[in-house]
Each structure stands twice: as C-alpha cells, then as structure tokens.
Amino acid sequence: MNEANGCEVWAFWPADRWLYFTRCGASTETVNTWDECRTVQSGKTSRQECTPKSMAIAQQPKGQTP
Image (cartoon, rainbow, N blue to C red; front, top):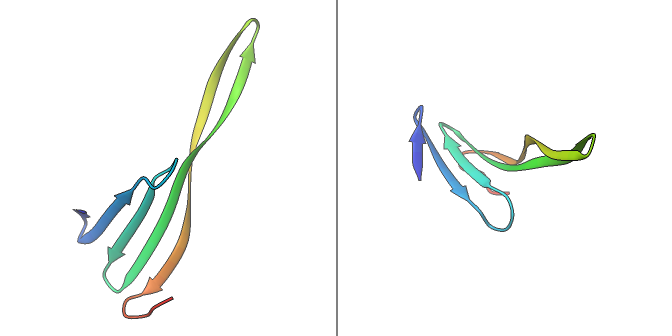
C-alpha cells in the first residue's frame, strides 16, 4: 500500500497486467491498466510501439457494497 495526496493506493499484478485499487476520501476506485502494442515495419526492420491504456472497472462511494 502506498499513499499519494491523502489517498491509499494498492497495486496488484494478478496475471499479465497491473490492477490498481484506490481509496480516496469518500470513494473507492479500481483501475485496470495494460499496454496496447503493435509492430511497425520500416524497410527490413521492425519495432514495437506500445501505448499505455487504463480503464476504471469499479467505483463505489465509501460504505456501499457492490
């Protein structure tokens, strides 16, 4: 667990991507993050270009259960 700007932040690596759980003030948010990668061909060489992505998968006001 880490703390940033008065919020509690947990980070988990359950499979192949990071999952973040944040408790801040009166709400809780769970965010899933991943990299979207593609191969870019340039002549006879190629390289990977990756873009970080994230999506909130759960948001709950404090004291409520899903």
